[in-house]
Length: 134
Image (tube, rainbow, N blue to C red):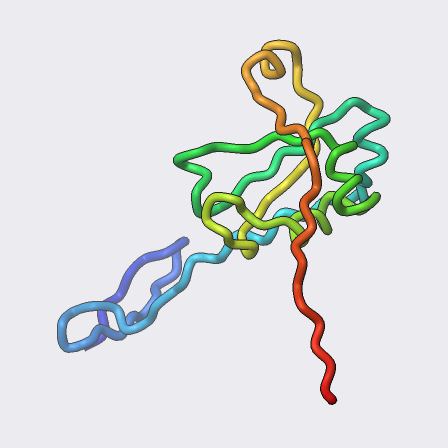
């Protein structure tokens, strides 16, 4: 037996299941991914005195954001776009790469006093064997 509801001065017929529940399901829309309209390179961040923050979507609640000097990141990855940097980095805590977020900021003096910036000390290169078939 259909039940009627009044919605915006219109009568809408809804079919109910045998349990008395509406038989249709409306999913909530997902949020679109964050997109930057301008391409921002690491060299531009160095010129403007900005910092790069990196955040992992899985372990950010416990540890929070990490802040990097863009000149140090240029030594590792080259002069790349900040959006490409998200795909190149992985989380040091959980080891995942799929939910890394990063952006550039200009911290005010009060924020800069509280945050710790990670600095590059040295780059270690792993040795891996190369085999030849004889």
